[in-house]
Amino acid sequence: MKYKENAKSLLIGLLCLSIAFMMGGFANAFSGGSVNVEGDFIEAKGCGGEELVGGLFHTRMEDFAEGISVDGTTIIDADGNIEGAITSSTGTFSSTLTVTGASTFERVTEGGALLATSSAEATTMLETDMITYSGYEMTPTGSVTLTLMATSTMTSLIPNSGDTILFAIYNEAVAGVATTTVAAGTGITLLEATDGDAVITGGNLAEMSCQRKIDTDVTCTIDSNVP
Image (cartoon, rainbow, N blue to C red):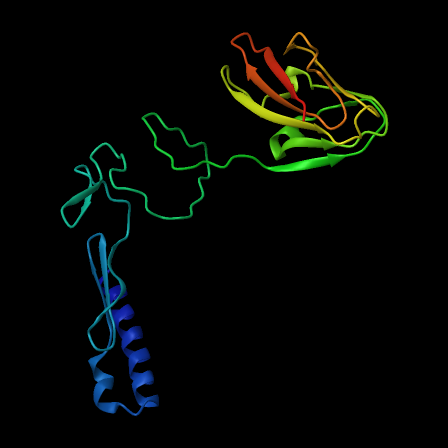
């Protein structure tokens, strides 16, 4: 270990010496840099003895049983919970974010793009579409039936009982020209108002909400809005 320490110090010293010669600072060349290794810590210093970026750092994982604080304020408590406020305006969570306590939001914007489609044929909705998009913007050239996918293929969309998804279906056809009829897929219970909201006439919008039940089936309610 001592040999490695000396080798590191010698390497940094030679580097600083070369830099100093190139800059004409012969007198400062022998101040040298250093790397001190003590137990699980490494301390790196520059040519003038100043602490390098990173300063003192660990060579292995450390366990902070009492938590971590900054200027006397607890940031991470002894149980590993983040106590401090997250003030960054941007961030990415690589896994599912679960909120167990009360949350306050000034405004929440949710949703993806709309998928524009034009067809005169019956079609089946895809789970990938409902994951990627917030709705269909349909311009059917004739009356079509749009069938919801089977619940067995909604395992990524709403995998757990109680999971809910909202989806919009626009019929952009001229009123009276073509209708879009939403039909249930295998395992889906489709609920609508008594006036037939599952039939979306031209110029109307239907809003659909689907929720996974305890028995793994899915219930979807659909409500059509007329200008």
